[in-house]
Length: 83
Image (cartoon, rainbow, N blue to C red; front, side):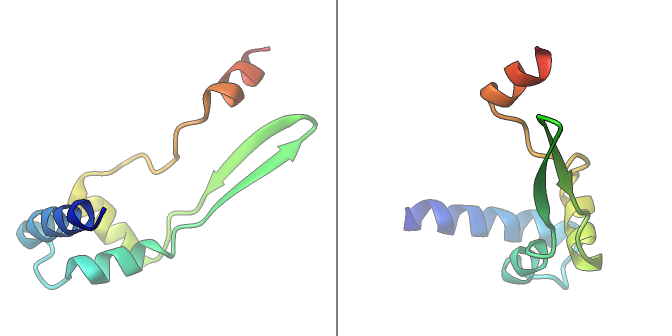
């Protein structure tokens, strides 16, 4: 597990170096904590809300080319929505 974490951290460092050299991977991961997610159950239908996060989180997402921060729904939720 530690090897995977180190690999991901180094990869993030490498990707950020080109677009946000002033931001370390540690700072980028800390900035991502400002992104919030909530699930609401309204009339039997689950709705997921995702906030865009703070300024640094938005900069990191843009630098990494991530446009859609809404996580995918589970298979169970997909079948419930189709009914």
